[in-house]
Length: 347
Image (cartoon, rainbow, N blue to C red; front, top):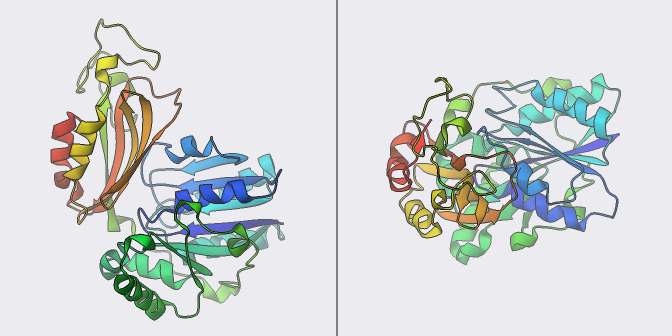
């Protein structure tokens, strides 16, 4: 029986950081596999996970697996069982996933496989700094907090006591029975608090939730700068000789990553561009940026960001490849200044 732990939480809540912080605390030889679902089309978190002690990472991209991509999670779980037989599967949902729908799919798989899988827990990560803002406008955020075995309060250290009390009041109104645990910064929480819960949620077939397409709650756009050959495949339908991108091929000396030194982005320019991104309409910017020191993962959420250097072998010709997520109808125009400052384009 393979226990499955599901992490939900709205955009930028810190799910990936918490999951990666758990891994070094697991027993030696413990085999965990991460199944990750993301809106964008770039496998960003798998780059970070490669540096962890995960046995494998499987990413389902370009949609939410509880509605638009329903059914893909089952297939992925079966592949993980057959190829890795791990001690545990960790599922990290997209920011808009309905936990009830995912839990029911796992329960159904329990029955179909005669107990090869077991839903161990649904864990919801809350961004305490921004929860009272998006909880008012997002049915998904309220649903995630309502259907959970454990609620992790993340980024609470940025709040004054009164503001944190308001967040806890909101959460207790939505779900007063579920335990709520504060994360210890980037050190996360003790795995013993999360693993081995043995969830009782959705054990009854009559609890089947309605599968509704809520994908339009969040709008995503892809921002790109680089050589035409590196354009996202779904966006580029021109001929092989096309040079429609911001940066074109030249006769300059090519560096090891396929780009000339002058093609990288100065971090000061990136920082300036990010400062102009309105967090009221843009909630998450995530992807790859080639800085002067090499390729980095940019992880921006509600005005705060991290840059993590990674060794990427299959992104030659890419200078910027980001997914921006936020309020429907507002993301494209809200990111216009950012694109102009960095001479990037929306594809």
